[in-house]
Image (cartoon, rainbow, N blue to C red; front, side):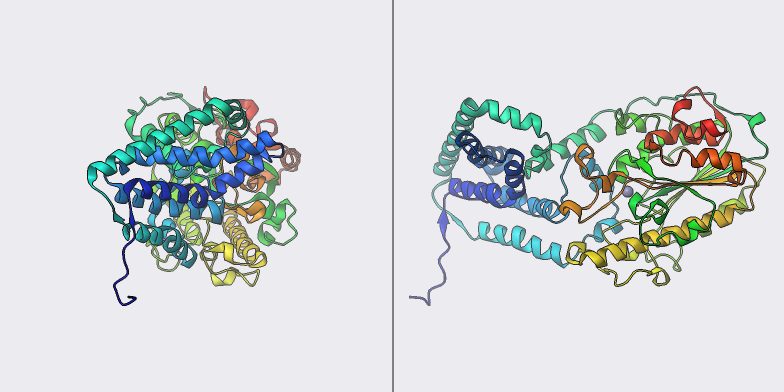
Length: 535
Ligand SMILES: [Zn+2]
């Protein structure tokens, strides 16, 4: 008997649909159910009733959604696609604590291949096989029982039952759902794969379906305030990547991560918050004159940013990129795009270490004569994860043992901390190198500010990109460091130093850069210019 080939088990289409929806409810949406439990902490009978209605509601909703998305006719193929997509989403949520809202989708879409490949590791593979491929194989090993029309009828019946369940729950528990939803707006972002599809649709709609907004010139006639200038200015803005304020010894971190900067005359601002928790939001936002509250990617992309204004006023403005891209900020100014193979000494074909920027800055400073006002932006790769260990060369492995792998959740906390701290130690070297290049140039200054922070296992979160209003401090508090030849003037230095504990944010960058550049513009808001009281 046992010698017979194993029988394929037989299920009807609607049974397959129900089993898959149950799998999605219990396994794929485990983080969602856990979040609901933590948000509601049920204790009374009514609260428990609500809590147990959630998986039933979700399962019924998934049945209807899967059917509408094509499972009515192509049951296996459509369910397989949802399973494969969700295995990646669940990995992100479980391992890194990622939620898939529109800013995260934008972050994913704007990720280049080098960045995407840095997430490939054994953990992801095991996860993909276990919760993606194996369920799909199990799905395809089922033989569909019954004739096509019988199956179609039973699928419709199952959907009617699901709709009935949704209606019943809505009728009896509507108030509870409304209250819990209102008080916990992010809960909905845990529902997989629905939250992902919803955000994906909104992202596509906003970026590709809506016609682009007409371009808005915010100030057609900005000018350089010549009497304010002693000699042409050289401003270098360094955009940091994934650097956390609390990891800088300049800000009180117990480890000496900033030995070089501490020996220089720099001022570190200790209370600075980012505009977003991801590069795709923070970088365009910090250069835009929209505040964080009013920030919108589509609006920001279709109007002048501060670099456009300073450029129009007559500065030589240049963007040099060692990240993925300038996220549209440098579209209208001269720029040197990210090229991962530009120099074998610093680049591996996917990434270059930030030291390449020192070389490129030296070239740019030599090329442009000192007689022209100039603003050069250096976009660093900084502390970009999860492959932190690739951000710094051997000579900067200051804190050991480090964690030379991308599945960082499998490194112990000490290794992870060491690796991340090495990236800051290396950033310290880069910033000190920039100041060294500037120190003999009159009227030169450098302003370094990171785009967002990073979670390193605190509260079970890793990386960044968490929805802003519930993101932890670690993802929002960024370092900002200022150096200027003008700081040799003790009165100016004292004045700026006195501001270093004040609360600032990316909202201040637009006007602060106009102020530093002595550019007159109708868009300038003096109260946002950090240094306006010290000129
Ligand atoms: Zn970033």
